[in-house]
Image 1 (cartoon, rainbow, N blue to C red):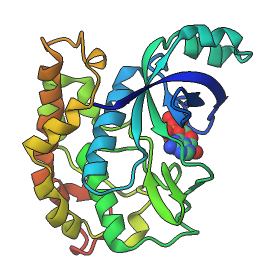
Image 2: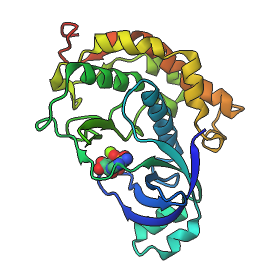
Image 3: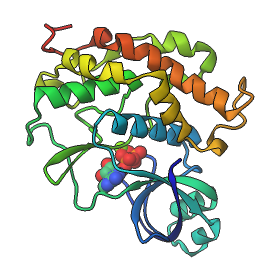
Image 4: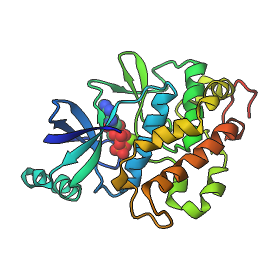
Length: 257
Ligand SMILES: Nc1ncnc2c1ncn2[C@@H]1O[C@H](COP(=O)(O)OP(=O)(O)O)[C@@H](O)[C@H]1O
Ligand SMILES: [Mg+2]
């Protein structure tokens, strides 16, 4: 279960990407980056953030802590910005929050060095979840206190948009040619040897248990939230065993697969 907090103050929108996350303060006095159920991409984006964030953390990758944030849509009434007001009004109830890494800076592949072991772990993880949002144009990697942190896992697991085709879709290779860490000789074979054995059914059950029930209800073909949780776990379990052999477009220490 993720910690639950309630928004007390909307501070400012973060206009970098497309989804207009907000910086907010909550009743535990924490500052969070908030992602809204009422955003255009919908609640599946939030489910993807939870699955990938909780999985990455258990694999030892750095990701900000996740919480769910309750929002009273009345908070939107005081917002001068029309777009923000609409978003808040459409997002009453439970939303996603992540710890705000204050004064983090965006990762720049030309300005920072990354070791091939760390690059390999991140490329392997992105291949596992099919992340299309880690390109050098838009790395969604932050430097914070000298370390690399992973954010923005909304555009992953494309198979969850079409469950009947999920198995076939999840068997596809991963194209890493645009990956922000492609230039750092990612050791994906080493990463696979270390991380793939950790991705067990048990671990994935724990990870998917963190998805709030209300983001899983009403999905065609699934009677219960747990049935849908299992559907999230299955392709990841299958991919973990094979995906390092299906990473395309980078020179790896494996010898250019
Ligand atoms: N946890 C965080 N700590 C600090 N800054 C963040 C955090 N999450 C996001 N940001 C900043 O907000 C921007 C937008 O967030 P992101 O999750 O990438 O959403 P999107 O790209 O969909 O707008 C990021 O590029 C980053 O600059
Ligand atoms: Mg982003």
